[in-house]
Length: 331
Image (cartoon, rainbow, N blue to C red; front, side, top):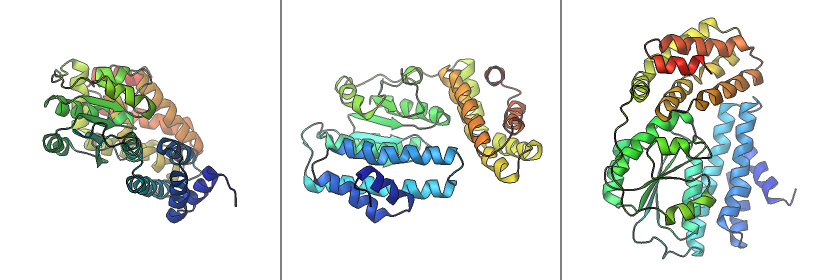
């Protein structure tokens, strides 16, 4: 068996061996390897490979989810182990916690879990609320915890409208909001347009970002321009728009049934990403989702007519939204 911890961890994750994956990670922590190094070197590296294997059609969605669940269990164990070892200086920020949440309907919880562990390692008190945190749940936590800041994680561009709702909720009670995750561009332009107090491109950047945060913030003003209103309307109609578009894709696509289903499953994400592009004024989101969807199709031996069927179905549903149509047609 290889002695390389990263490869041992990957082998364990690949065969859904939670016990071995946990053993590899906690052994490193007990040997004095810093928590951020363990998280990035093992969990982060494995998660990137998992995503690549799904995108290339080498792994099924079920296998991807099972492997991710192993890493989630590992991060929970690392946080518990860190507490037992008393590795963190609990004096930093101990008076007011940091609230770590995923945007509503954002199920990619692992980045936020890793962030929570990193912050605890640095000595911060953290309250982690998990995946798919509704605005109502966030409002309750804001009032109960009186946090120093709310940290909102989003991995998908289709989550950006929900991030905005969290920004509104937090700033309405004067709590600063830091956003991050792969839904955002590296320069933080999308974060700025959503009204976030700050953007952290990585966990390594977060400490300086937190240090520069104001104690209190003013509520963000409403987004009332035509593009924003279209974004909200699209998300309100997302279930019916998606159902109609999926039915049309299944009818019009030329690929085999398995490929068609894999591509049709992305339709809600496409609509949400268009809404995110409208809300942030960032047309590159639509270009990114186009390239990504083409890659999903190619990996499943689907020709371009299949992904084009998605965009045709999306356009049909967006007929009453001129700004959205311009984005989709100019992709």
